Length: 208
Ligand SMILES: Nc1nc2c(ncn2[C@@H]2O[C@H](COP(=O)(O)OP(=O)(O)O)[C@@H](O)[C@H]2O)c(=O)[nH]1
Ligand SMILES: [Mg+2]
Image: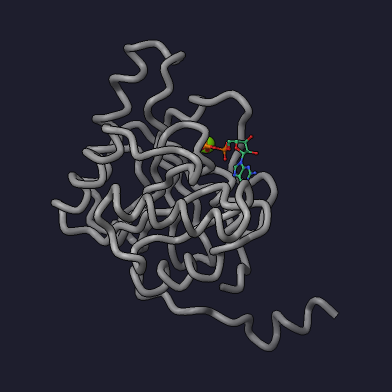
């Protein structure tokens, strides 16, 4: 995907604060520290559009980013970080659930999992719940650069067994090497119906 523009739109905790439902959206979710913000930055080729953190559990809002003025990427709050106070943790489930159940423009979801970890019970339940909603869901195995290619393929097979997903519903991703970037964009295009938009001749000339 050729990125002509990528911008932060808004942060929300409840539907009244969401942007107007006028563009197709795809959402990213997963445990804190799994690499959601890094993945979005990699997709839009920006270092810091989304703040990444060594300190997990910072993103507690639904964050909307517009790409090329045609679609939005939605960074959902990370779950499962024990150091965050219980009261805050308890808001996350409903925040995610409210967005997923009430957003008419939501076209598909990416559930991120660290390729080095086993599927946790909460991830298994979440995956089932998402699939029960009939939304397209893809599993992204993040930080694939932590393994050699053959070890990563071994992990992919193990995670397919654990989740019952087929190979075409999984992708290995690395924000570091950009592995999986094109594949994820082609999924986003087919989920949203927003095809690759090439720069206009005029725009292409501007860079000279
Ligand atoms: N090696 C490696 N580290 C990554 C990758 N993606 C994220 N990280 C690191 O994992 C940590 C958490 O990343 P972040 O994107 O903030 O995760 P989030 O909490 O899910 O948004 C940061 O220290 C990142 O630098 C990746 O593809 N490869
Ligand atoms: Mg984040």
